[in-house]
Length: 138
Image (cartoon, rainbow, N blue to C red; front, side):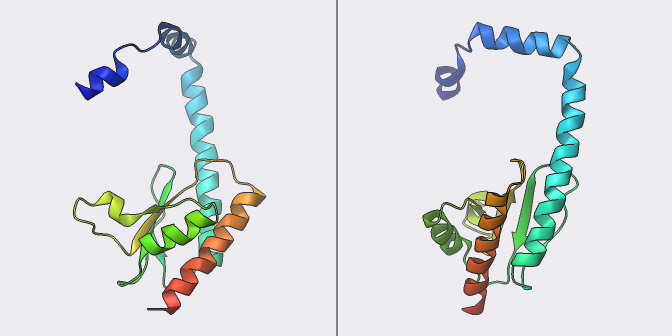
């Protein structure tokens, strides 16, 4: 019922525009460009995490997508990092959101969906500083 209430009246104009876009043949070209862009942004994100985060963090390059999963040592609190980062306007997704039982507290997810900017660089650098402070407390 919730799904029906949320989406029973998708605007016809939106559907028509999307249908024309798909029929035009532009979708595959758009997706190729988007995949290249995201792969480039992911490479930058990984390099920046390697430079600005403490040595105790581990991550594996994803084979696709726009999210990077970081794993800290047990005892690290991604919720505490989230709270500190949020106060500074920095976004991240703490690991427990991916577990029905609150697991992965020592993990977090970062996104590289937006084009890279100097502002993002500064935020990631600051996030690395905050993460380093929490690692020192372990």
